[in-house]
Every structure is written in structure tokens, then in C-alpha cells.
Image (cartoon, rainbow, N blue to C red; front, side, top):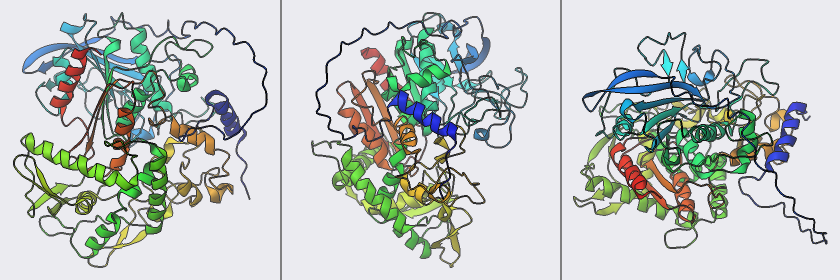
Length: 638
């Protein structure tokens, strides 16, 4: 029996169709062929764009700051801190406790904790209005990012991780401009305005009864809407603020990397105007038209968890096309996955081989549908994708050696620590049977199958599915899989929650967003209670017949850069994208596909994409070269 959807959810769906047209991630029209004659009608004169409804309320108060003192390159340096500057006119109200912050914590800023900016600028640069703005999006794992006090911070006590979130630069802190891991010092020393941005996303929870549509106000595309609203605030107040809003460089890692790339790919897209109007963003008039740009000058993104609706397909292709999941399971049973002491580490993660094959095979068609091109101009498909990625991995190792790095010798043993989401624990002891690089950086030997096996053993692969996980019994931590240790002990699912709660309406805890997960939803379990209007078992609807399917697909589209690249006039012209060469949090294809799409976009001038050797899922590990790239782009002035 089919469970009827709530009227509110259907009303939202109809409204969303009206304002957004529901172009799905694959784009295109409805396939209709209307050849009947149509009488031309005069094109009406467009209404002029009026002032932003909340522009006067969003005026920047340049006198409202605190002076803190930091040590920058060994010198005491006064820095202005403009604290928790709200960048929208209708900020989300926060419940006192926010699931996105982890353990039970009371948030102090319940008025604008998810939509504010912490702005830092050296006193010496406060009056300069041509310096660049370094905008950090603090989204991690697509979770909402709060900025403000915790548990009643008094505003005077020294800031720690337990009494405040979102203050990257603190009174008494020491920063340097010559470190590969200190972006704060690098930005301040250049005179940049350093900004951290909070934003709504999954986990953002409002008090009961405040909003008629539900408490989960961070559903997609909220994180992108907020990033755009922050840029609009900076542009609105450009003449009053330090720095130049035409020289914004946005930076983010993981979910923040995706948030950054989506912001950069969708500059001035009208798709987001209804959402910006609802948030009270700068430059949106009473009719939902825009008078302010939300484009940015450049983007520096690390390991972007992008293309979410196809991420599970890409992951299963990446780690099954050469039987990686199965090979790691075999190595686990043989006792070949150990640390330096010989103690066995759990890395096997092959809970559903048939499901892995199903999603892997769907990726073949998806990749072909993108219409991307390889370096030689041929279509980039699964037939040549492995060769393309192999080239990038070899280039990564070569660059690492040329820069002075040392690889574990071919045939020798090395170690690699677990990393990433649900990557396991311990430090793997492994034999380098995959690459040989000489002192000049020349790669003489490379084995892709062995390399992927190493990647999947240095950190345990995610479960299957990896991103749309909620409601899947086979991957729960209490479910024994077909994998076992060398002693015959069962290995359990590698569940970490995935990103299912990024999707759905504000009244839904989550919604599955791919066909595989929707049709196999278990209807509720000990970890995730029943969501009555999600999944085949609860609703009676298959994914194809799901009344909410187009709504969810539109959410996916609006946090996926690929449908916008090549179609957006306001796209960022300068891109720097890095992904760890041993990052198993997402498929290598995700960032690579984005780079190929960008290189085909005539409006994009610079695409600097690379894998970084011996790097897991992380960001801002190459600050010196990243800021050298930023310097070059700013100097070129284009």
C-alpha cells in the first residue's frame, strides 16, 4: 500500500517546479515535438531591477571590530576581527543544540550562527581597498558549519575548540607566511582580508514551530545559496569594507571543496535567485531579480566531494573495474594486511559484490553521457579513463620527486596511516609493488591494479553504497559481511551515514537520492528510524515512480558543477583543484571530470588540476605553491 505524501511536501514540489523548471542533472528537454503553428506575441519589456529588499539592513558597520594581537613571522601584529557579521536579512534560527556539531553542545548564536562571516585583516591593511579577499568556506563533509560561541562563551576568555567555532585567527596566535600548512599566515602577510564563512547544510536544525515546512533548514542547495549570499554581502559593502570584492579567492576542502567549486561554477545563475530571495540576500529585489553579482575571481579547491548523484556509481567503478574490493578481501583473508609489528588491520570492505557491479556498470553510461574529451580530443569514456588517471598519478609521483620528495623504493617496504571518513585505524605496512621512479622523476614502472589495491588498504574503502547510505542494512556496523579476517572472524559493515540527509524536504530527516538506495531502503532500523515517505518499502513507489524524484534530482543538480560548466556566463575564470593521490573518500574520476569540463569552457582561462602524491583526504597541504598561483593570477589581473 502506498503511503500518501504530506500536502506540504507536494506543495513544495509544485512550487519548486514553478521556479526552477526541474532541469535534472542530465539536462535536456522533455522529448516532446510540438510542430503546430504558433502566433508570435510581442516580447514584453523586462521590468527594471529594483533595490535589494534587505540591502539597507545589510550595511557593513566598519567600526564594529575587536583588535587582537597575533605573531606573524615573529612580529607582533595587530589584527582587526569583525565578529560574526550576518550576511543575510532573513537568517535561519537555530535550535540550541545542533547535530552537525557532534556531541551535545549549546550554541550561543542562535540568531545567525549559520550565516555569518568572521573577518580578519591586519590593522595596516584595514584602509586598503584593492587587496584580495581570501574567503574560506568551512563546510566539512557537507555538514553545516556554525560560527560563534559555545556553551555561554563570555567573549573574553581565550578561544579554544570547546568554547568557540569559526575563529581561524585568535588573539595570541602565531602564524607564518612560509609554511606549506599555514594559509592564515600566508594570507595575512600578503595583506589579504581573511574571512571564514559559516553556512547551512545537512544537520542544520531549527527550533520546532518556527518554520512551517520543517526543522531541517539546511537541505540542498542551502550551502551553495549561503556561499552566494556571502559573496553578495561583500560586493554590496565593497566601498565600506577592507579589500576588493572583485578579487575574491574562495577556498575549501572536501564538502567545502564542493561548495567552493559549485559557487565558482554557478556565478550569477538565476536558478538560485528564488532561494536567495527567501534568505534575504543582498541585491535581490522584491520580484526576485538580481542587481549584484555572486561571481568570484578564483577558486582553490581540495578533494571536492562533487557530483553527488553519481558519486556512488563512480566509486564502485573506480574500486571494482580492476577488482580492487575483491582483491583486498582476499588479502585480508590471507593475513596480508598488517602494521609494522605484524598485527592485522581491518581493511576489507566488499559487503555487496552484486550491488557494486550494478553501480559500476551504470557508471559506464553516465560517463559517456557527459560528453567530455581526453587530451587527445577523443571522447573521455570508461574505455580510456583508467589510462588518463594513470597518467595523472604518474605525473603526481614525478612532480613529488622533482620537488625533493622521496618515494619508497620499488620492492621495498613502507608505511601509510589510515585517513579519511571511516578509513579505519592503524598504520599499514606495505610493499611498493606499484611504482618505480628514478632521481630525475622519470617513472619506469607503474601497475594501476596494485596501486588501487594499496589505496584501498592504506585506508578502508567506504561501504556500498558509499554516499547514499541511510536505510541500507547490509552496510550497518552491526551487520556481518562476507568478509573475514585471517583467523575467520567476521568483518562488519563500514557504515558512516553518508550524505542522505543532505536531500529531501525540510520535514524529512533524509531522503535517498539514487535509485539503488531508494529501492533497497529497509524501511527503518536501529540506527535510522522509519522515514515513512522515503523508500520503496515505506511508500510503495519505486524510484522511477517516486513523486518526489524530480525534486530530489533538482537538489542534486544544484550542488553539482557539471550541469553549469559551459553554460554559465558568470563562471569563475581561474581554477586550482587538488586531490590526494591516495584519497579514497571519493573516486578519482570526480575531480578529473570537473577539470575536463572546465578545460572545454571558453570562458574559463586557467585550470590547474593535479593529484598530490602521498596525500590522503585533506586540504591546504601545499600552501606555498597555492599562494604562488594566487599571486600569479592576481598579478595578471584577468
